[in-house]
Length: 297
Image (tube, rainbow, N blue to C red; front, side, top):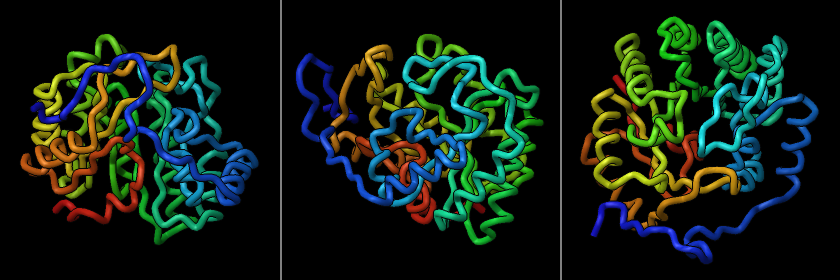
């Protein structure tokens, strides 16, 4: 039996393990209203995350900076592609205010890729980390950044803001980049993660891998090897789910048992923290995942 215990997708209903209840309630409505009032975006909504209902009902979300239009087009992502608006100088303060209103103890910040900006948007990310720290001194802050075209100065700008966790997702095996992530680079993403540890050895790093895009088990395991060699501390592994019919189809569904085996393989490679499961996403339960493992040192 394969490591991921996978099967090829055939027409018909999704497997039973992909069906989950969608929670809702007053907290979710209040959070949605707060985001609209502050003109803020979340990756939860823009990427059509299957965990949106659960997270919003608990009063937490992943803030997405620099608007809702990405300058890249990836075959698996439902974030809109188009000409973005200029950076909003008031956005960092509004994000910090919303986080304070929500009473967050752990704040996750991500951003669309902004290849139109000289720094790729790194300055906006760093400013937002600083504003969150000012408004919520006890809170932990995790950043999930684009690759910034591999520019060390841009990564350094974010590192100077001292996030508790620096996350950059590898997303998929290298063979699939040309087709599904053509403006990205597997090597560039690995180099970014490696650079972070070279620059700040005690900086906690994190990366995420999706399965179900057409990779083999051997390819997925090689990615885990590569991430661990880059000294990544935390790895997340989740099932790719097609957000719309316009996006790349699912090639295979991995069973819950398959994810347990992937987790075992990752732990055997030496990752201090592993979070694997059907609905796992890079920012899902980020606070819980942060407290699961030892801090780097």
